[in-house]
Length: 185
Image (cartoon, rainbow, N blue to C red; front, top):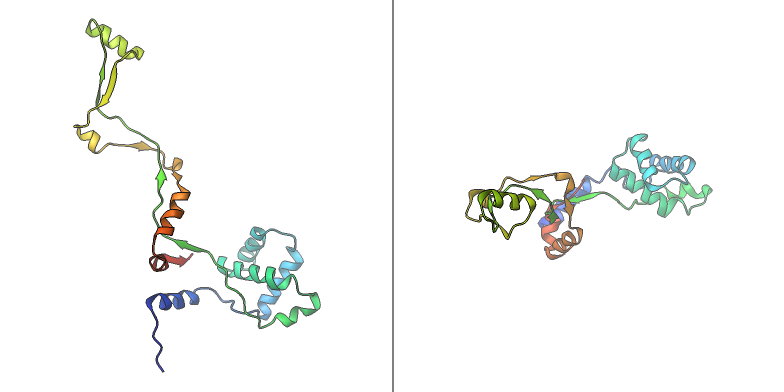
């Protein structure tokens, strides 16, 4: 019997192999959930996942899967019924990333050649008026080499991502195109 898969289905099968060791509640997973209950029952999601990653050696995706199952299955189950959870399938939860382009706002500085126009009675008077900010007009020399290829000084830490435009950009792309680019982190 042969089964035909599309490229997207094949890639999805490959990524499912990367989801981690935990597909169902095993005695090890049950023990992890008991440790969470005992030591981190009132802790935040971040604290629990850090505990699972640092102290228990899980990956981020495995820790999120265990935490998600702990919230959905384990908390509502009475202590004497925890053994009944063995074999129950875990719902995968993971961190995905998608490589895309961010519309961004960046403020930079450069020096472009241009002209300051001032009305004056002499060269000295013109220079003094320019220094005082008493000018008629300022314009950039658009025919200069620096204008077409400026040397820009900017601080990359001051980049502002235009988040709404990123969401619009993702919305406009085809879903199959996005599926080709997304991967588990």
